[in-house]
Image 1 (cartoon, rainbow, N blue to C red):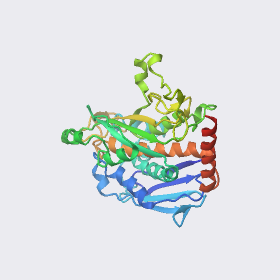
Image 2: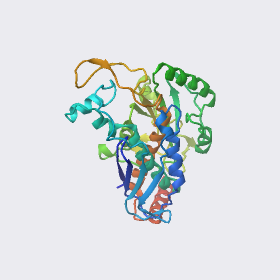
Image 3: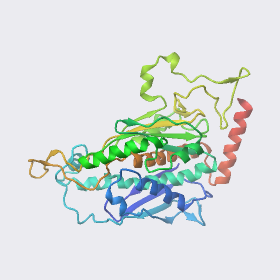
Image 4: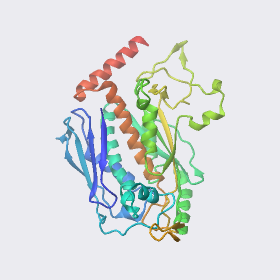
Length: 381
């Protein structure tokens, strides 16, 4: 089973990512990992620390001559800002942040003890894991695309197209498809920074060419929608996740909320990777915990970061008196960076489900399993 874990703190020596369960033979391009890390690091709205970090991945194990060898992959990204032992205790806890809750959990009067690990700096590891997973998906022409659809109160115009068209249109630091909205969003960020405030927003992830039947309908914890929702919800500052029509299902009667099958000459049409084509995609590509062959669509709401340049009132942990919350280097808007993380964790979960269905020791064997499945689908349906 494909899995990963990360280790490291925000101001520690670095972030380590360890991935296990990948078959041997997958080509890994270090530059593609660097590209995804840079998309996260250089996204619009980031704090000043990102100008100091380089986020250079150092491959420690699991890859030989540019390909996986079946053993665990470990990758290290060193922190240039590694002052964890020099930082003062965090007692002026920030409302909306983890400071107070983790201090109480760990029975300490220093919120930094837990905040260092809960920091979004840890998501460097998730981006690496997702990039490695995408290397597997690329072999099967499966692509995960992500873009920002809202910053603060201003939405971007919806744009449709193929994966390659969307990837080209998204080539900007806001990671949006609507280039015309960028000046308005830049103005929003400028005003928020000037006021010492922060902004939230929404991003969307779309998976293309997902084969039918990924996931599980027999165990609740392995339903594909459940796995995806957990992975996206676990991104720092994400407070809401929906798949397909999502919360808008509540506005429709059942007769208007189903994805009817598309017919040609009174016969169903099979998608390239299985599943009958649909006239709509309200379900977001997942039914009953399984992929249905349509594009998988996920949206996430990202809250404004609670570390403010113009801090709010709080209570000091030690003195138990009213004070102002601590101010530290932080993002003005984390939505564009969070979108990159969202694409990474979705890539990993799709790869995990793919391996669960077609898994083998080598990429060659896995390819054979996949092709045989497609052959059976075309024969039977």
